[in-house]
Length: 231
Image (cartoon, rainbow, N blue to C red; front, side, top):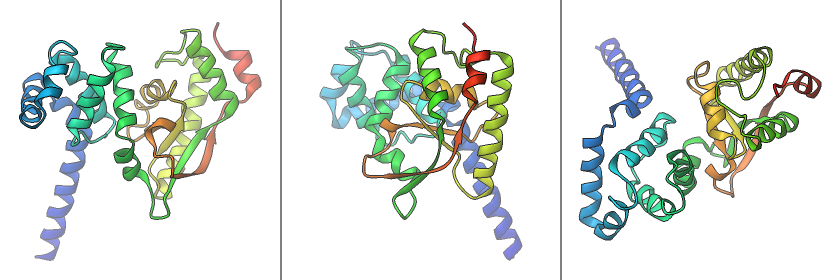
């Protein structure tokens, strides 16, 4: 009997993990409309302000899918919709709006990763690499396929990332990269294909009272960067 219970528990846990990883694929427009209608019952002014003049349901759907793809819970839908209502007059870019929502959900994100000692174990980017990538972003040449680097540098960065985060996982830590808000989503898109479990956080995602403990630094030598970075 015990072995059957254990097997059932393992299967249930596995199914929950599968659902968590694929939740974003299940979010379709009709579901989003139902969620919005539920919020409207308790917060009618919020929904009247946001839908449809501020955002269309399909745009809200994109934000929710983006959050779920990175395993950010959307239980606090009122906070998400309040944030969208606040910032959609400034931008209709759903990537930017998602980052605003993440900042508004910082306490939720912080609870996901904080230890009992109020610490988050993270991998940081080497300052020279981070500065280089921010420069690429400012020039408009930072894309999630190459980060503006040559194929050789992309391969090296993939290799270094795999080694560091594999070590992190083996030691029982969540694989977390902490970086600038400017780089956060692009780095997630860059790393997720080879590291599906990766969590890429920005400083805006975490409550200010939490301490960071650096597991390692992700780096490429500055000389290699200068030699191989594409124009």
